[in-house]
Length: 180
Image (cartoon, rainbow, N blue to C red; front, side, top):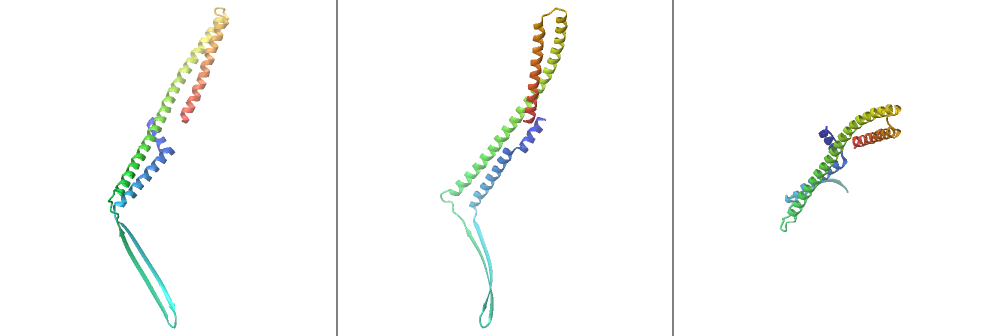
Protein backbone atom coordinates (compact mmCIF):
# COMPACT_ATOMS: atom_id res chain seq x y z
CA UNK A 1 0.00 0.00 0.00
CA UNK A 2 2.84 2.38 0.82
CA UNK A 3 4.57 1.66 -2.49
CA UNK A 4 1.36 2.41 -4.37
CA UNK A 5 0.97 5.70 -2.48
CA UNK A 6 4.56 6.73 -3.24
CA UNK A 7 4.18 5.88 -6.94
CA UNK A 8 0.93 7.83 -7.12
CA UNK A 9 2.48 10.83 -5.36
CA UNK A 10 5.49 10.85 -7.68
CA UNK A 11 3.26 10.53 -10.74
CA UNK A 12 0.93 13.36 -9.73
CA UNK A 13 3.28 15.82 -8.04
CA UNK A 14 3.84 19.16 -9.79
CA UNK A 15 7.35 19.56 -8.37
CA UNK A 16 8.37 16.23 -9.85
CA UNK A 17 6.75 17.10 -13.19
CA UNK A 18 8.61 20.40 -13.27
CA UNK A 19 11.90 18.65 -12.42
CA UNK A 20 11.29 16.23 -15.33
CA UNK A 21 10.68 19.19 -17.63
CA UNK A 22 13.92 20.85 -16.48
CA UNK A 23 15.80 17.58 -17.07
CA UNK A 24 14.36 17.26 -20.59
CA UNK A 25 15.27 20.89 -21.27
CA UNK A 26 18.84 20.34 -20.05
CA UNK A 27 19.13 17.25 -22.28
CA UNK A 28 17.93 19.23 -25.29
CA UNK A 29 20.43 22.01 -24.57
CA UNK A 30 23.21 19.43 -24.24
CA UNK A 31 22.29 17.95 -27.63
CA UNK A 32 22.30 21.44 -29.11
CA UNK A 33 25.70 22.20 -27.59
CA UNK A 34 27.06 18.89 -28.91
CA UNK A 35 25.88 19.70 -32.42
CA UNK A 36 28.60 22.35 -32.70
CA UNK A 37 31.11 19.51 -33.17
CA UNK A 38 29.65 18.88 -36.63
CA UNK A 39 29.61 21.07 -39.71
CA UNK A 40 26.56 23.26 -40.20
CA UNK A 41 24.82 23.07 -43.54
CA UNK A 42 22.59 25.87 -44.74
CA UNK A 43 20.50 25.50 -47.86
CA UNK A 44 18.62 28.10 -49.84
CA UNK A 45 16.25 27.77 -52.72
CA UNK A 46 14.39 30.40 -54.66
CA UNK A 47 12.28 30.86 -57.72
CA UNK A 48 10.96 33.92 -59.46
CA UNK A 49 8.99 34.56 -62.59
CA UNK A 50 8.86 37.81 -64.35
CA UNK A 51 7.37 39.42 -67.42
CA UNK A 52 8.60 42.42 -69.36
CA UNK A 53 6.07 44.28 -71.53
CA UNK A 54 7.62 46.29 -74.27
CA UNK A 55 6.94 45.99 -77.96
CA UNK A 56 6.88 42.25 -77.44
CA UNK A 57 6.03 40.23 -74.38
CA UNK A 58 8.93 38.54 -72.73
CA UNK A 59 8.55 36.21 -69.81
CA UNK A 60 11.31 34.64 -67.87
CA UNK A 61 11.89 32.48 -64.87
CA UNK A 62 14.83 32.53 -62.53
CA UNK A 63 15.68 29.66 -60.22
CA UNK A 64 18.37 29.62 -57.59
CA UNK A 65 19.70 26.92 -55.30
CA UNK A 66 22.44 27.35 -52.77
CA UNK A 67 24.22 25.23 -50.19
CA UNK A 68 26.73 26.52 -47.65
CA UNK A 69 28.72 24.58 -45.10
CA UNK A 70 30.51 26.00 -42.09
CA UNK A 71 32.58 24.48 -39.33
CA UNK A 72 34.24 25.97 -36.28
CA UNK A 73 37.64 24.58 -35.47
CA UNK A 74 37.71 24.30 -31.68
CA UNK A 75 41.22 25.64 -31.21
CA UNK A 76 40.60 27.21 -27.81
CA UNK A 77 38.21 24.55 -26.50
CA UNK A 78 35.10 26.73 -26.42
CA UNK A 79 32.88 24.09 -28.01
CA UNK A 80 34.20 21.33 -25.75
CA UNK A 81 33.70 23.51 -22.67
CA UNK A 82 30.15 24.36 -23.76
CA UNK A 83 29.35 20.67 -24.23
CA UNK A 84 30.84 19.76 -20.86
CA UNK A 85 28.89 22.53 -19.12
CA UNK A 86 25.66 21.34 -20.76
CA UNK A 87 26.35 17.75 -19.68
CA UNK A 88 26.94 18.94 -16.12
CA UNK A 89 23.63 20.81 -16.26
CA UNK A 90 21.97 17.52 -17.24
CA UNK A 91 23.59 15.83 -14.24
CA UNK A 92 22.43 18.62 -11.93
CA UNK A 93 18.88 18.40 -13.27
CA UNK A 94 18.89 14.62 -12.84
CA UNK A 95 20.10 14.95 -9.26
CA UNK A 96 17.46 17.62 -8.56
CA UNK A 97 14.81 15.23 -9.85
CA UNK A 98 16.14 12.40 -7.70
CA UNK A 99 16.28 14.64 -4.63
CA UNK A 100 12.70 15.79 -5.19
CA UNK A 101 11.52 12.19 -5.64
CA UNK A 102 13.34 11.03 -2.50
CA UNK A 103 11.99 13.94 -0.47
CA UNK A 104 8.46 13.33 -1.68
CA UNK A 105 8.78 9.59 -1.00
CA UNK A 106 10.01 10.30 2.52
CA UNK A 107 7.14 12.72 3.15
CA UNK A 108 4.57 10.18 1.95
CA UNK A 109 6.16 7.39 3.99
CA UNK A 110 6.28 9.56 7.11
CA UNK A 111 2.62 10.53 6.74
CA UNK A 112 1.69 6.89 6.13
CA UNK A 113 3.57 5.67 9.23
CA UNK A 114 1.98 8.43 11.30
CA UNK A 115 -1.43 7.40 9.97
CA UNK A 116 -0.78 3.79 10.96
CA UNK A 117 0.42 4.93 14.38
CA UNK A 118 -2.63 7.13 14.94
CA UNK A 119 -4.95 4.32 13.81
CA UNK A 120 -3.36 2.02 16.39
CA UNK A 121 -3.58 4.80 18.96
CA UNK A 122 -7.31 5.06 18.21
CA UNK A 123 -7.72 1.35 18.89
CA UNK A 124 -5.92 1.70 22.22
CA UNK A 125 -8.00 4.71 23.20
CA UNK A 126 -11.24 2.89 22.33
CA UNK A 127 -10.16 0.01 24.58
CA UNK A 128 -9.15 2.47 27.32
CA UNK A 129 -12.47 4.34 27.06
CA UNK A 130 -14.38 1.07 27.44
CA UNK A 131 -12.26 0.15 30.47
CA UNK A 132 -12.76 3.64 31.96
CA UNK A 133 -16.52 3.43 31.37
CA UNK A 134 -16.67 0.04 33.12
CA UNK A 135 -14.55 1.42 35.99
CA UNK A 136 -16.84 4.46 36.27
CA UNK A 137 -19.87 2.17 36.51
CA UNK A 138 -18.20 0.16 39.30
CA UNK A 139 -17.06 3.27 41.18
CA UNK A 140 -20.55 4.76 40.85
CA UNK A 141 -22.06 1.57 42.32
CA UNK A 142 -19.55 1.66 45.17
CA UNK A 143 -20.32 5.37 45.73
CA UNK A 144 -24.05 4.61 45.98
CA UNK A 145 -23.35 1.95 48.57
CA UNK A 146 -21.12 4.35 50.49
CA UNK A 147 -17.85 2.50 49.97
CA UNK A 148 -16.05 5.36 48.15
CA UNK A 149 -16.28 9.14 48.19
CA UNK A 150 -17.56 11.50 45.51
CA UNK A 151 -14.03 12.55 44.56
CA UNK A 152 -13.33 9.04 43.29
CA UNK A 153 -16.35 9.27 40.97
CA UNK A 154 -15.26 12.72 39.74
CA UNK A 155 -11.68 11.60 39.13
CA UNK A 156 -12.89 8.64 37.07
CA UNK A 157 -15.20 10.92 35.06
CA UNK A 158 -12.28 13.26 34.39
CA UNK A 159 -10.12 10.38 33.22
CA UNK A 160 -12.89 9.15 30.94
CA UNK A 161 -13.48 12.63 29.45
CA UNK A 162 -9.74 13.20 28.97
CA UNK A 163 -9.54 9.94 26.99
CA UNK A 164 -12.57 10.95 24.93
CA UNK A 165 -10.86 14.27 24.18
CA UNK A 166 -7.68 12.43 23.20
CA UNK A 167 -9.78 10.23 20.91
CA UNK A 168 -11.15 13.30 19.11
CA UNK A 169 -7.62 14.62 18.64
CA UNK A 170 -6.50 11.28 17.23
CA UNK A 171 -9.47 11.26 14.82
CA UNK A 172 -8.46 14.74 13.62
CA UNK A 173 -4.85 13.56 13.17
CA UNK A 174 -6.03 10.54 11.17
CA UNK A 175 -8.05 12.78 8.88
CA UNK A 176 -5.07 15.14 8.38
CA UNK A 177 -2.63 12.30 7.65
CA UNK A 178 -5.04 10.69 5.17
CA UNK A 179 -5.32 14.00 3.36
CA UNK A 180 -1.57 14.50 3.45
